[in-house]
Image (cartoon, rainbow, N blue to C red; front, side, top):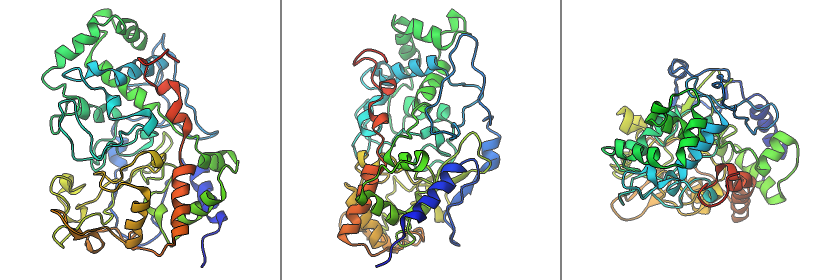
Length: 416
């Protein structure tokens, strides 16, 4: 049985590791797979190609990146500073940010779980469950879109408004309690110096506003870069940090037999990737054959993917490929948390689509007419499956992201 040699993967690593400022073309086949080119939209949002200047009295944020790797896009109206990141860290972990004072951002994004929550779908501050799984936050600043199936939310400053103020479903549940929630931070003596340090250019009477809260949260989340996996040691530092099973799994991942890398390509293992140097933007969304409820391609009515935004039949069940970085810590899997283990995920793709044998969503996803041609199925032995999972679990896990105190709970111990 033939397999792609290691050098095939290394050539791919070089292409995406040394030339990430060039357009990343993942689709080398003649397939139509909902890659929405939104270059003009992105270029007109005010995003700069150079690092914006920070206000006097603020400390510029220094990115921890592999040598030569470009930083993420930073909005010109919200430059990265050490002080804003630190304020955002406090706000991220503070349950005072929710309407009823019971839940923080961190309740759905746990650091030790790569900033996910180990739930199939997340629970909001009022006990209401959503319909989608909490997404990991590592390297979120490098994604071209920020949610499972919305092609418009491309700035963290805009996306954060959804969990804070959104009502369908309720997450932090601030809508209707905006003044009350903001007043908590005005009254809390901990926050006066944090806001003063983060926004030295603002007068005392304008120190605590929702704009400052959102901007600080965005800076904190944007700071979560993650490039310290064994894979990164190999790709960017020339260190062979993978064990034999992980190397065999990497060969399989990049092989044309399995075709994993076509949907989970690029440095993020997602296909969704942009830096401050990018000249071409893609927004990939794929139907992976997870459902086919009626034999005509339908997905569960509360989770129809990109179709819910565009209304176009071909977008039914199309979701953004999540990053596979730290994927060993983000179970359960898929947009609705409906697959428990990585082994089961591999089995669904090997089959060419998942079979749901009973229940309200019964159907054979292998026959979904909107399924990506890349999900064609493949033969894989138990040993090969174990190697592939070893690569995903071991080579793509970043221990620094999971332990670094700059992203940890400031209320659980001393500040870094």
